[in-house]
Length: 158
Image: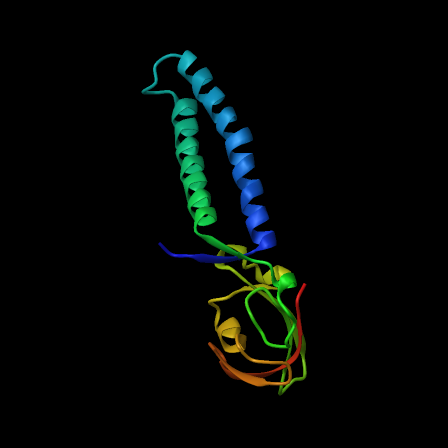
């Protein structure tokens, strides 16, 4: 089985989604299917077929979340000693060596990645280049537009 690294916040978000799916959406869909059955002929009942299809998607998502949580390795970076080294879960401020533009990313698991929120997947090219490096180091990242060098300005355990 694959183990999935996950931050505490990521695990909490999956648990909340799972609770919503099992306690709210699943009962609503069961009720909708029951009501659609009462309407008669199921072969030509669009409401019934739509509810069954949605129920299948919800059940698949529930199984996926349960599997991910079961195989999750939850890492609380706040309990790890700050050494200035980039590890999973840390928040890293990096500066482009050419333009001096700075950007901040948190390195998270695949399920948690959201570039708009400054969260990048541990498997992304930037994260792979940063992992294991320390504050002050210069890293080279291969991007579609070419090679970019970044300096690690600060590593935070938030």
